[in-house]
Image 1 (cartoon, rainbow, N blue to C red):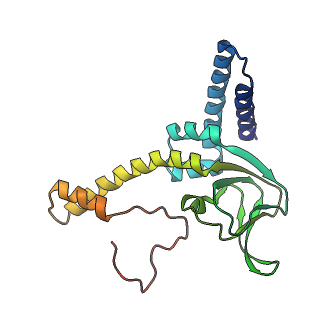
Image 2: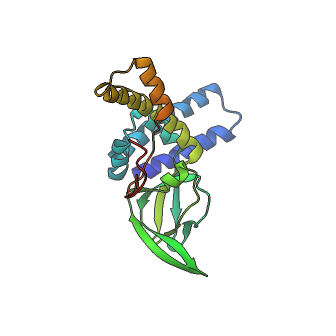
Image 3: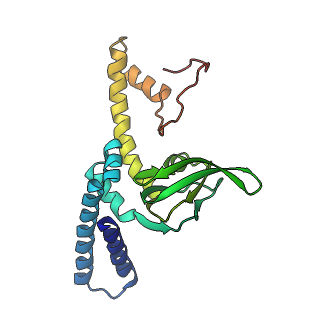
Length: 219
């Protein structure tokens, strides 16, 4: 509840700043200071929230990224039996379910849907489709009244780029150590090989890496 209140206050402050063209410099500074304090509070509450803390830990999001993330979070509520998105909609957002329960359904015929899975609170949803710019494979419906946070793709990508650059440096360092333990290759050639012949994949839970019987082309 405190997290949602803080997000609402931050939104009101930014709206006030945007629409009041007659603010003096002193008032501008006051709003900026309030913004900083609210963002600091949101970051603290995000780290305290059980579900969000698990996400922060899993993706190793440091405070620098969280401070960039806090001002762009949107809070939404959806009533029971309402679609959040429909099958084949374009993916432009990711979501974090704070409260409620969701049903993900597949269209199986004229005006007929079959439930594939359900999701309870404290879970991210819609992220992998957004990252890979895929159409939604299933419709998402609120089974109960739901409260959730939204992050738009364009903002998420900017934040993710920093994290990816850090992971990329770690990947390069790991692969150099890995190959050097098996074969002796000049460092410059090894780095060139890593850049040209390796790639990094982002996998969601239960995504398939390879199947039995696939051609063995990759390490």
